[in-house]
Image (tube, rainbow, N blue to C red):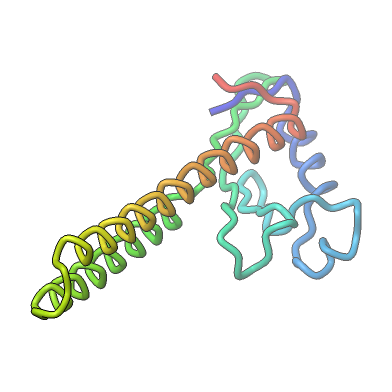
Length: 157
């Protein structure tokens, strides 16, 4: 939730000034920072640096009047889908590593300690990769929120 000292009509105008409906139009112009839909008091927009097929988060929300000159912004920056994608990557990677380690350790010609060490390191790298993705998602969410709050002249409440 955020609050702005601007009325809803001015906030909608500000969003229309920086948002194009189509990605191609927004990408070609330096004026637009977002692309997406703004319907009356609701919006679902995404930063131009994230194309249709990227994993960049969208900013969804709605605007409500508090008083004549104050507006409440309900904002949701969705990164949950990307977090679940990272968890799926980690689960599948650990599963493949575990199966491969089991198969290699069944062989009598290989030192089991070396096999387990190598596959353990691989599992650690997979875990570090997923943790890095989650850190990047949190940072992206924070940066997008900060930029959106600057554009709408709002403050978190």
